[in-house]
Length: 196
Image (cartoon, rainbow, N blue to C red; front, side, top):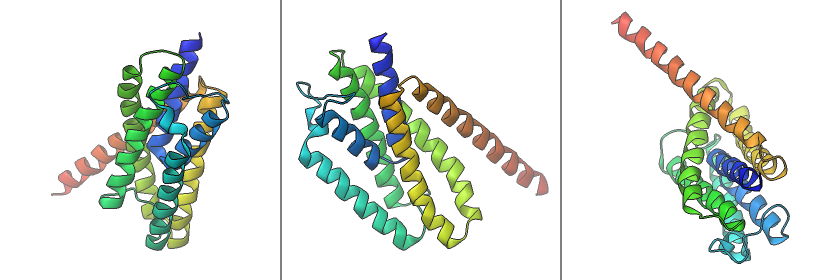
């Protein structure tokens, strides 16, 4: 049962990093430093709770937030910033899942693979869903969306640590959003082809 909960925790942390990477990493690292639900000490992933790593994550959060606030929208579409945030999110998701497994003495490599998949799934779902939402919002609402996404990622990470099985619900909802969004996009483009 303990391994199941740790797997759920890793899934949730990876999914949270797929939404936005920085606050979930800071939350997990802070909790691990206090050995509250996580503890990466005595593993190859102890750097995830090191002050230098957490400071780098905080700096990344500040830099990305400032850039997005100036642009007036979160980095969801194509572009260098979106690619960088997305890559960091997927990488951090893999590390958090691997670290969660290593914390209980399990091999970390399945967590690395699973973390990549979970973070990529939630990232694709968030980009698809919120990418459509952004197009309908005015500039102020688009700028506020950055805060909502950060809050959503933080909430997912907190749920992963406090109630790990709920992480499975988060991933299931992300999968449904992604499938429905892709289906809607296919219908839209099919309609455009008919108009030709």
